[in-house]
Image (cartoon, rainbow, N blue to C red; front, side, top):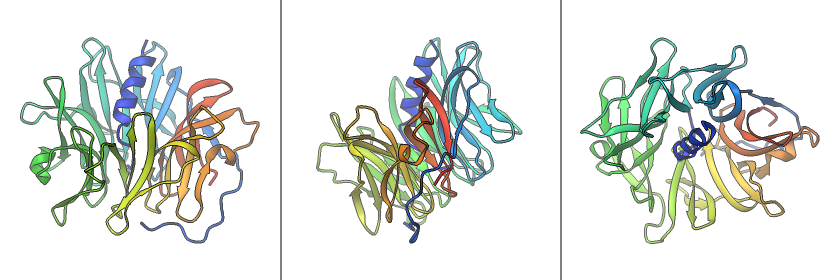
Length: 347
């Protein structure tokens, strides 16, 4: 359910390339534990994990035996299942899953690189989300437990606005919902939305109850802001960047905007759960390779690679999503082979 924005762009690149604040209380730091599962693939090797719900169902993208990347759904009973495609010859990937098992993501036509946002569930399968005012929903970024979906709209080769879709009212532009254009990145169970401006120079938080949107960064600077996820307390995490300088952040209405600690180098925060636990990716001081990290207010930042057996063969590079049990999914290298999706339950 909670997931990371700009996963859309990252996963689109992955598909194209592979196709050819309540925080935990006084808990001690986690001790090293294996608690690590390779999710496998759809038969073609590469896989990435994007989101995990509170039933340990996981979604992402994987290459099948014919070389096309498809959205998948994984669980501990059935393993990795191909969610299929809407149009022959397309590739796709899933971005988020809610606790009802509804999945959203993107399908990409490999003929003209046209993208379509989709919604999938076990009863109706995969379906294309509607257009609105001539704009196509090209990336369905997140879905909450009420089945409300947010994402991005596209027209004439440019992103034009975000959208909010729900089963009752259908598709609405973000501008019509909150009076502000932007690319909607995540939605929580209260209907609060975080989004970024069309020029990426600011990020904002929309409260559906008060009908007020709040700029969460200093709009006078020249950094680019990506709000990746928000939890049910309205706490937002993400990252901001200027050139090669990339930093993770956390924001709430009470404490404002704060930079997150890193492993020593650049850092991106991708998800936050309802306990205030954050995951992402950061480059350690002594490495050129990003490592998956965990953060909370009591423990601080931890390299997930320090919590697995040193001879496991894994380098956990990106932690994409964390559920309320503290189970983490992401992508790493296994025995020197990149693009393995993992589930880590060792916290």
